[in-house]
Image (cartoon, rainbow over all chains, first blue to last red; front, side, top):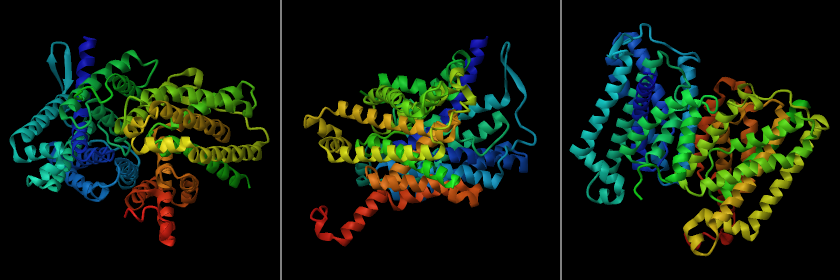
Length: 287
Length: 289
């Protein structure tokens, strides 16, 4: 039973990673930039989730609003942060992004205070028995369901809509896409909106699972999400999703069996380095 | 006076540390987001030895050797990955280092090592020692940059495939840059441990790695003087910012952003442009532009 418990725990963790990593890998695919400030949007999403739920009493409303607001903030981040730096080497954008991420942690601390904020009445905390002997809180089930629905949605968007097709074309060859009449800037704004909205959803989910938000909550996910998109082969959506679930499960098993040797965060990176030594361009790279 | 001496020593250690990364990232073009791990390796090695009764000066060589040896391992691993993959791998090294240290009771674990003995000659002694070693390291850097090896590093940084085609053993030179750079970081670490006299896993985390990388980039990748000035400024800045203590990181983060936005080739690049403006005839780029 313990093994199944750990597996489920890892799966939940993996779903959250997937939501964060998706935006990151989309941005990387389009711009070839490691978007560290993505984690600031995740934190912002968490804060909005808690504050709006506490103000209105509706978690659903909070989730939708957080996704929309953070989506627009994400578009803004593209406009002021990355767009002017596109002609520079990627390292420049990476450092600028780290700078914004460091500054944003301080902004959260200054605006919302240094201490964590919790839900007044944490929603979805009832335990439900999903299998004989194994019960989960509603919040956890909700996390997995939401991740599943959002990812299916993105899959549909990518395969069945003009936006999705244009996005895939831009990823493969921006110049060709542009000369075929794709407005590359519109694509980039849309991808920043979608990716950031997903990060916000992940933020709300994490705030629900831990029943708190704090200014530094983005730090660990931001680095780990970078590890995930590298593991999945940079820019590959499917690879990032599988890597998220894999990492969630490995980490959960690792914290139980490797605790004397490594702490939780280094397990992820030990695994990452190991994989990169065998496949230098990620698990799912071609060739 | 004691306060000024502490600030000055910190500044010199930061310069030494930043130059050691400048060798890897600046000269040889290999991005490292985990350089603080090597500062840590040097610091831990040296601190363990002086606590066992060694004099500080005798621990420099072991600190450099241990950091350089682990640098070879990381460097050899890094040969397999490039660009963004390399950045993330070295970031992993940073997390792995603190993760391992945290769980080692022998190295003080979460609590770190306290009570590291003072250097011979106290603060003045440490300051002089740091000054000499920093100058020595910068001299070596200038020498390397002007030698044929500097040209080889530059060609690898520009385009390693072409360098390989020209018959340069790219792997060997990359490894050499890693060894030299990580050994330099180990030396900085030995000095650092005896400056603060308390070290723990958090002193060598990812933020420190980013800080030192930002010194190199704000200074202008590969520019020895630019990086020296940037490291000096960025390391004393927190002291200037004491008045706005609460907003320190906010200012620092925004500064990084604006530096990248408006000065992407750093102080070194700025100086170059300035020189060319004053002396347009000597500008080599002019004919191409």
